[in-house]
Image 1 (cartoon, rainbow, N blue to C red):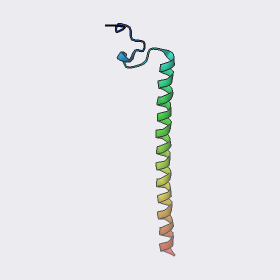
Image 2: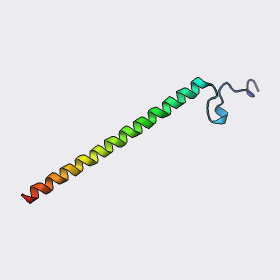
Image 3: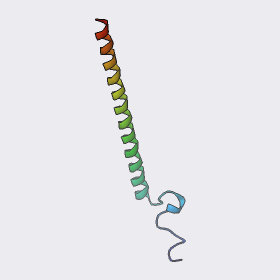
Image 4: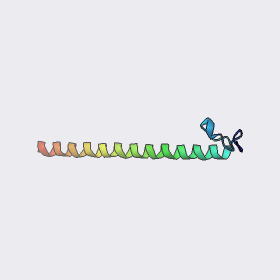
Length: 63
């Protein structure tokens, strides 16, 4: 087959062979990780706010 023995990028091995594509993939993975961390932080903040609200309700009940 034409050009089949030597693929330009080593996608058949599961990762690109040339450094630029590898760097691109790394950057993309890092961005995804950062977005996941951001979502986690937002979830934590939301839970903290809910706890704060509950605490205020308890105080109101005591008075």
